[in-house]
Length: 94
Image (tube, rainbow, N blue to C red):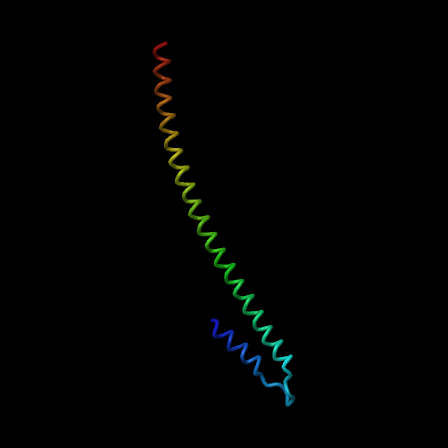
């Protein structure tokens, strides 16, 4: 991918313009624009990778929360059943 952009930048620098001499300033600006484009593309790729990593971390955390929630609900239902048995026994003894 980087070779592809280097090739484009090189073509911009050595591009054929009409039969006049290309000044060093124009070449420099073409080179600078190519460099800026490469930096912007690199930043965009880095942001995308960071976004993917963040999404993966969020999904893992969500799965953990759901698992913990299910375990807590199961434990609570067992506790409620025990309290119900105790409550029924207390009602019978009175």
